[in-house]
Amino acid sequence: MENQKPPLPPFTMESAKQKVQMAEDAWNSKDPERVCLAYTIDTEWRNRTEFLNGREEVKEFLKSKWEKELNYKLKKELWGFRENRMAVRFEYEYQNSEGQWFRAYGNENWEFDENGLMAKRFASINDLPIKDSERKFI
Image 1 (cartoon, rainbow, N blue to C red):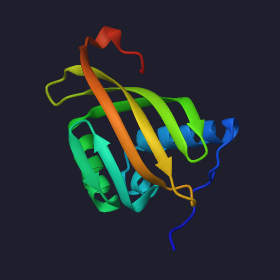
Image 2: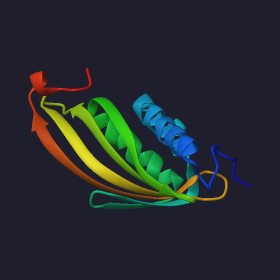
Image 3: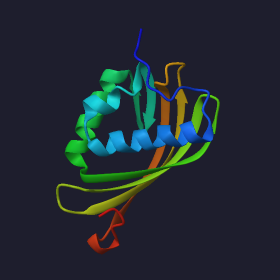
């Protein structure tokens, strides 16, 4: 039996916002071990053009992501929810190894199991090169 990750579905406005904030905080930790515990063992992901299956693939993906996306800072916003599903808008900034800053914009669709673990995450993301002076998340 997997651990529970409250708040559990069905979500209210308050619990949905709490779940989004918890995800934002975890991702900003840049700790793949911590982040991947929010997902089911057999979670399904689409992230840009990558399709991942399972918590272990997610953990390896996140390790690689944060090795390339330096000075990463993320902000998430709840767009909508119903029962065990959420739509989330996000943007984040990062710097590549050459020093170029980027802002990434996107949307995620989330589906949770009865234990509050994310079973599905489908993300559409676009990156925009920005100048240091254009950064929002300093």
